[in-house]
Length: 335
Ligand code: PHE
Image 1 (spheres, rainbow, N blue to C red):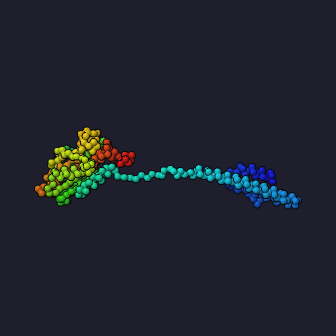
Image 2: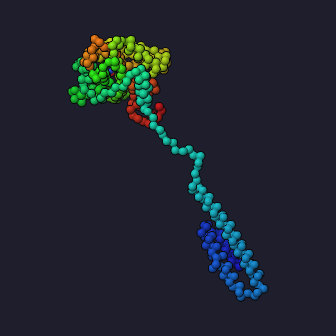
């Protein structure tokens, strides 16, 4: 039995899995195990020897049971540690970050501009990007020999269909189907056959404005655009109107705003002039009113057009127009 104990001790100490422990328990202590076999032979012993041997057998059983339990616990502990290592979960690790989309900077600017004009009682008009030459030029009092009509500047589809070069054709379309008073803005894409560079793109965005009613004057034009400039660029913004020429307005002007970056002192943003040109405008030419079916003797109106891309670039200090079109997330995410 002593030998049996030593043998069991040796074997059990080598065990490294719970199954091995179980089979060793069966091997030594089971019904058909080694210890049981020895006890079966007790019949041949003298009666006075039996209790002594029986006691030794119990001790050996107890000792083997003890090492089995000990080893079993040790293995269980090791297995648990192994499992913990494999299944380790760092609950302090930051979770997955989901990215939320948001509006493109140009859409944000356009929304802001729309809100200002809707607040002034304007509504939104739309027109097609593929337009009749008539609406883009003739009806806008733009003669055949005007440089804008040149193939070099305009994408023609046929001789009388083109990609609109400005949002101004929406003026005519609106006047054709609406009676004054008219107060509309019309944002949208326009196309010009320009080479792509930091300030040019063959497709860009404009917003047209048109007001037609009895007694509309240049004072109304200045008043509305002043309010817009202050609301959009800040209450301290001053405006300046310079004479200009557009075939479809008379008189025509360009409007500058005092530089929102330096307040007019002169800086990099305004090219050290203190002023930034933001839109073209003027009183709707009587020929345009007439061609659109509105009596120029009874009604007058003003119109303006501004570049959304340009205003977005100014507002956010974006120096390259291409950034607005490339949709590089590293850029877009900054707004
Ligand atoms: N359509 C003109 C342009 O593209 C801008 C403009 C609109 C000027 C309305 C006057 C009135 O430059």
